[in-house]
Length: 120
Length: 113
Figure 1 (cartoon, chains in turn brown, yellow):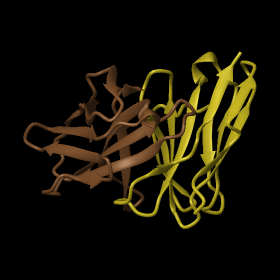
Figure 2 (cartoon, helix red, strand yellow):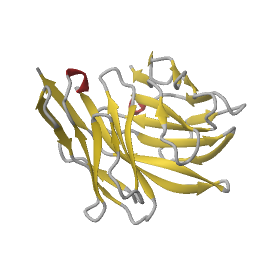
Figure 3 (cartoon, each protein chain N blue to C red):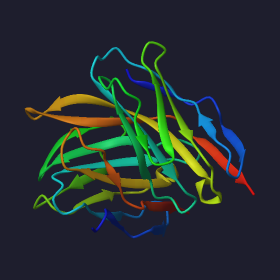
Figure 4 (tube, rainbow over the protein chains, first blue to last red):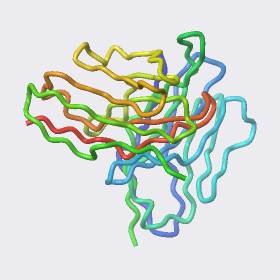
């Protein structure tokens, strides 16, 4: 079974500093995807960044980068130049490929999340 | 570009009542997912539709829960005889293909009195 572990219940960072949110995963699959989502207090889940298990380069999207270490099964999110609007819950998720009805689909398994607070 | 839309945003109901939630996915997305998120936890998978076919259901989806996607566009999730433990955020997501990221709606927050 897939498992995602986020060991930091809460993190604090000063505005304009960088912060790393930890994520480790457990899977026996060779093909999988890793995602980070942001959930503000209003509740919506916002897709941030994606890393495929076969991607050799770390994914980057603006101020977000994913530090993917496959051998260690870790997929940490790095947010550079933190902004006050980055304060939110952050979820790491893994997509496993499953088959049903003769077709494949991607089921997401989420970690418990990390609450990030950015101080001015 | 219209995102995933869910209605209502909040629902408060008495235990034992039936409730129905609606999800409108991004228009060209044929894959639709429902997740449930309880307080302090990450979302958990409930069910998956490809077009109008419900292809997978989690064991979390008891027989009081039913989901439909009649014309392969919007989807509904109904909970019959609600219980206290049904209080949660119900999230809908859609994607264009299995390899594309799932895009989530704002969720429906259900509170059972």
